[in-house]
Length: 241
Ligand code: SF4
Image (cartoon, rainbow, N blue to C red; front, side, top):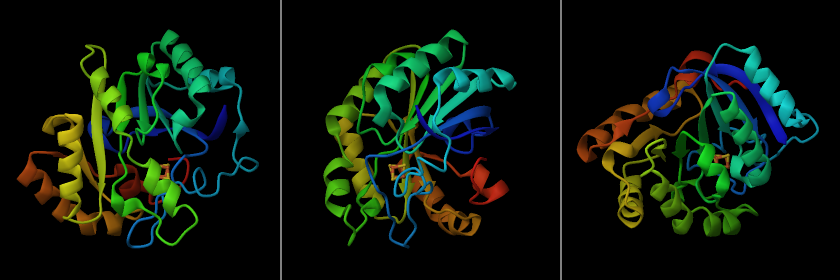
């Protein structure tokens, strides 16, 4: 499986913030986010410039499982990049992790779904709003065309009716005007307020803090949850944490 990083840390975002976890960061993404202030995706080494040769590269799934068992954690967070790009490998990985009684979170942009989903405990979906379009780049068109897949979003949402399955819709907030798109998606897909987490956009603690007040106010006004980015506050924009 094409892997960028394997590491132990705490979950820094969403409803499982603070939970010690084993992170499996997959390589490659079908999108290329770029935000209005100029920030690229926070892991450009998996999306804009996937470093197949300098990252871990192709890793045997058994080695990933072995590393997980060397730690003292129950949670596994499969993140990216976009993990669903490698859907067959992802299914095998999740099936084997379940045999080890892992609690599996997958962090995804939600544009792709397949039967790996039956092994997942928590899906953290982060639909990409129009603020993520990389205007003026070669990816502007493909990103704009692919960032919203309502059929896929609705299928994820259907799974949230399963008793053993949890979901959170996590939106990166750049400005107050993002709320119209979030509300529109909510209406079209049908998720509830309690499943929504708004997270300020930023790759430094200063950037995140600057947008936090506005984001909290949006949460209070619309009945959503707030998510910070705890790992950025603690370590800054470093890899492997
Ligand atoms: S969807 Fe996620 S991994 Fe892909 S480019 Fe956007 S922020 Fe990066």
